[in-house]
Image (cartoon, rainbow, N blue to C red; front, side):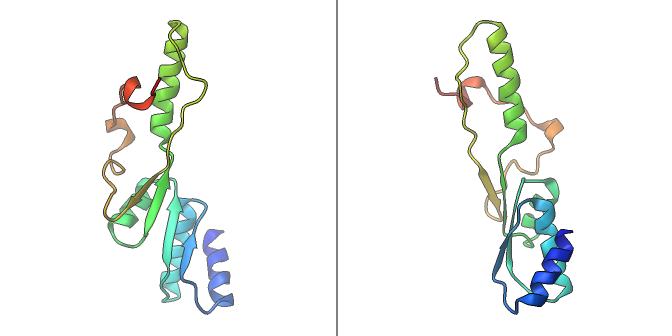
Length: 126
C-alpha cells in the first residue's frame, strides 16, 4: 500500500524533497519507490525498527524516531510491582521520543532479548 501511494505521488509531483512517513514500513516503501523511479528525497520513519535502523546505518533513511516500547514495558512492569509493594508510583511517566540518525543510533541496533531494563530511579524522577 505505502509503495503504491508513493508511486502515485511520484507520478503526480515532479519534485519531492522529503517524506515523513507514519511508520518505518511506509518509509522503507517510499525508499523502494524512489529507487524504482530513480529519484532522491530525504525520508524519515517512525518506530525505530531494526530494518529502519539498518537503513539509517546504510545511509538510505535519514532518521527514525522511537518511543521505546521496551522501556515502556520495563517501567510498566516495575510500576505494577511497586504498586503491589505499596511503594509510590507517579500518575504519569513521560517517555521522550528518541531520534536515530547516521550520527546517533547507539543502542537502537541491540536486539530486545539482549537489552536490560534501567533502574527505576534513572527514568522516574520522584
